[in-house]
Length: 88
Image 1 (tube, rainbow, N blue to C red):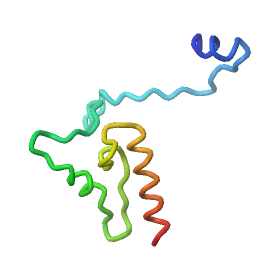
Image 2: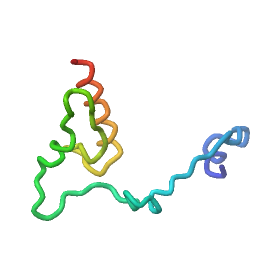
Image 3: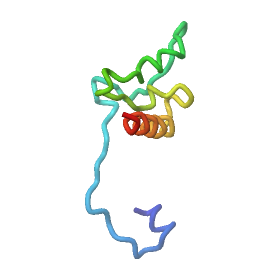
Image 4: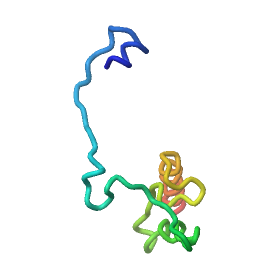
């Protein structure tokens, strides 16, 4: 709140709710993001993004060939899947 007050002034309201992620404690991610291992293929990200029977669609930074391990990669992959669904 101190930083926000410096940016926007003292009159900003207090948060109504707060959600804190604990990715480092998640046994499935351990706070990690995807990476291509040594001898890995870039096409593996495309494999992860492949829809299943045009019913199940996958988005997320791990499915982004252009921007893996980034927030914008996750965002852009969501847009990609939305377009894919619209074409059905």
